[in-house]
Length: 325
Image 1 (tube, rainbow, N blue to C red):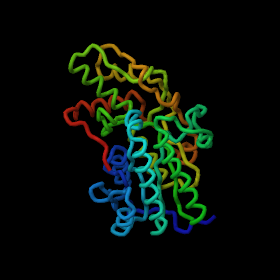
Image 2: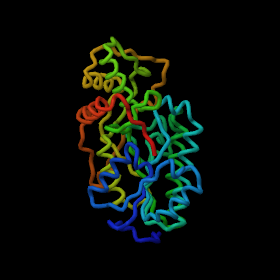
Image 3: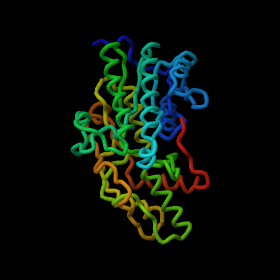
Image 4: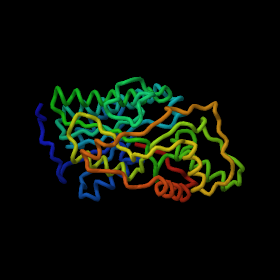
């Protein structure tokens, strides 16, 4: 199959980064600029509702992108996924579907779909290999979000096969870092723990309450490392198979909580609430494809990344940022 367009991206190309004002997106914008790409546009929700086909079409007509990096998402932790399964499925499915189809019709050079490891089956053998994506159903608490994102992988592959559209998919593991979403109701595990520990330390509380049993394990990737990887994939990767992006280090939630407490200066007790879900039992990626195809590996240790993230939260504790696109 021959891709219909020149896949080479040059510095004159117009690049649209959906979600470019958000957590990961803001670092990708900085990474692109550091490499000499200045012809960038970040659509904002107030101007373009990407769940609406008409707004997506207007985005393409007005800004004429050569490349689209699709990072915008409606997403949150276990609680937010449990409370908004319908919205998370619709919003993520609609945004991706409209953006890919409009990209095909407008003949863009490349479309980069940012997926999620929530798409992997609940009991995927560890480490997760990209070939295991279809060997079961995702973990129930985030399945609507994960299935929507997984459907977009299929769409990218189908459009490549039928239309010769150069669409690729990357699958970042759980991200964390400065500018993360620290909102009390919608944050993921690391920003949620940082907020709890810092606020407990400041209020001299004797304990914090953590969700679940602490037995689940996760892998985490520092946001700046992920931004570098996605830009590398944008410039180098032109194959239909999705590609995992991770650090290669797995840690239990119990050990993570203790580490966040230590680095935050919180010395009280950690009380576990087993009435709350643990989520997927384990998450750890096989990142050999990224190493092979992108010549990329993560360089920020968990301890260093957590320290930087805690410092950021301490500096912005009065008005913790929320992700927006």
